[in-house]
Structure formats: structure tokens, C-alpha cells
Length: 119
Image 1 (cartoon, rainbow, N blue to C red):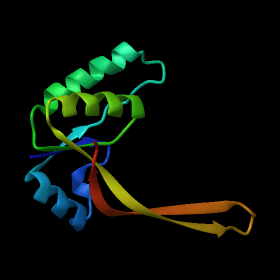
Image 2: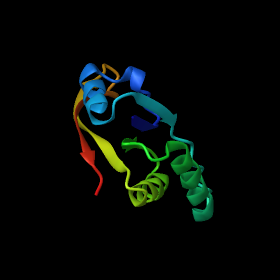
Image 3: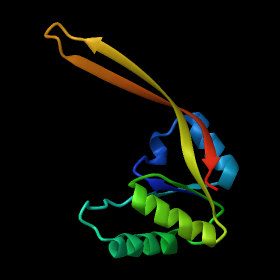
Image 4: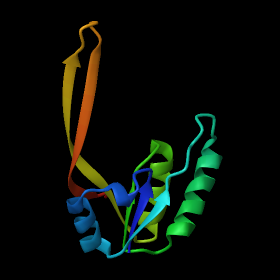
């Protein structure tokens, strides 16, 4: 199974990203990446990581994407469990449009390229 621990639900992924994820782990299961309050202590973040690691279990491949301290703690735990952890690699294209009032509107488009293992 391919576990997606992020706020980017797999039903909104493009065909290429879905296909690559399925090739890595089969069925895709989403687990919502929790909100990490900026006031959270290290102990609270560690507890969140413990709970997520227990929910993930010993699956084949897990993509983790979210707030950095929780992502790091969870990745460290999963790797200790011999779970393959990956991140999505994307190409970002930004278009800037200057509006008549002088304000600038930016549009960013992210295109999936690959999953990269976290080592």
C-alpha cells in the first residue's frame, strides 16, 4: 500500500502521480496531515508523530508532506520501522501578471515529476 500523509488528497493528483504511487505501493490510502499549532511543544509534536506512525503501521511506501518538525519526527520514526518514506518532487512554473491598478497577481502551477526517497 502507498500511504499519503499530507493535505493533498490523492483523488486530486494527476494521472502520472497516481500511476507512480500505485507502482510503488499498490492501493493509495490518504491520511490527513494534522494541523501543528505554532505553540506546540516538542513533546506534543512527538506525540502527534507517534500517533501517525501507529496509524501508518508497517506499510510499503509512505509520502510525508507538511509542517517541518512533524514531518521530520514522523519520517525518523517510519525509517526506524524500515518503512520507505518519499516526498513528491514537482516543477513549479510561476506567471506574474501586472494588473491595471499596478498590483501583481501570481499564478503558480506545480507539475509532478517524481517521488524521491528520504534517506
